[in-house]
Image (cartoon, rainbow, N blue to C red; front, side, top):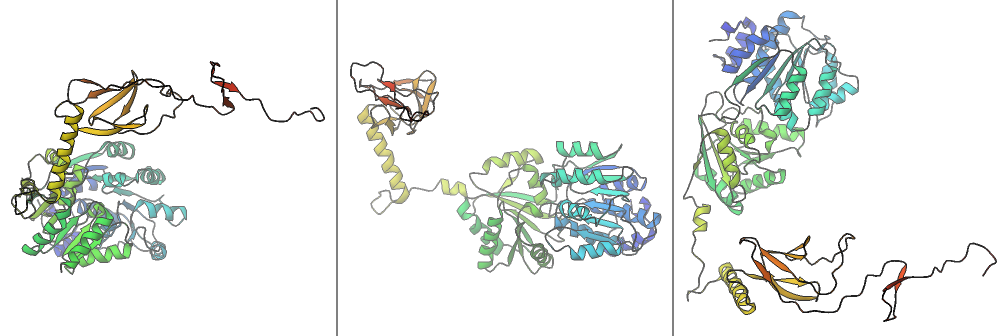
Length: 529
């Protein structure tokens, strides 16, 4: 199938030829005819499948045929996106696809002065591409009116809701005219997106191309098991030994992205970081440098995980595995786009090893593990203990063995059960340090427990203060509730707690230890004593 068979008009076909587009993708083959017929669209497709052209081409065609384009006209189309970078990218797509038309568009996002954006809107535009926050600001100022909107697109709707724009999106939709054509595009279908689609779409045409949780087969995926301190060393060695032209590295935090970029730059590897703390100008400059190959490595947080199309991106590195398995799919989806091949490898430390099984379960296949590299965690775990010339342990191995010996000796002296190391805890009844099993929970009564190593005094009113002889029962967690009884001698009860407004009686024959104190406040009646 070709774009001409989809009834695309000649001006747009010429623009597509200039861009090198020949065959429509599956999402474009299904979405373009439905949009041209005027149906609402609910499309779910993974990243890199051509979703932008799927809604941009029919909208440009309908606007070009149905209205008199030109300046001073009311806004007819609204496109909402979650990030500034994606808004700019969609604007570039409309520039390319509508090059042979007279349609005008404006890209609106926060982080920069709104003066230029206001001037662009006042000059007259047909299409507004915006992030929700800045759009609402301009609506409140009375600079944008949505009464004439005919086409609405929510791109990367799931990402928009994840970023906390749910309330803003619903508020914007409430300002739109009821008679409109709405298109919702998403990479995943969580419950929030399903609820939003049900509230804003009218008898939509549902399109799902490839499972949203699948990964492109052309992407070669692998895992490197390495501990945190050696991650940056492994990354530097891989970049120096390999021939990666363009590498996108994902970091979990903004501080981590800056740290990785500085470490790579100090190793003579051109790298820059991009994240939410940087200004819009700095973010766009960094992204342009990476696209133009002025920078070899781009270190980013998940702000760049959705919708950013970087032509010729060969490698994606997960320096930190994402907490959400779906995010892994979107990250590596930055490479292997438009039928090209790509490479994605991830660094896994001991704390994140549990995330691998969730990712493999989501994508439906097992990821290959690269073994035998210089910083392999499995090799480090098999490392022999450090010894000196005489065969004695040294360093951390010596200290660990010394501590184990001390615990064993202490256990033998106190007659503790075999295999149960002792740990010093505080006895509240006698005020002395004693040894108790380290994996135990102690009970002073049937419903009153104190955990191991707890030295806090009881101050809660509902818990009685300990008096007299106390017996602690220790329940060993690994075993079947084996009771370990400790001998405790009897002792005198501690002094009673003195409440405010009372004083202690010094009469030894007086049974009640508390008696009320006479008020020292003077009488209210004057002249009387």
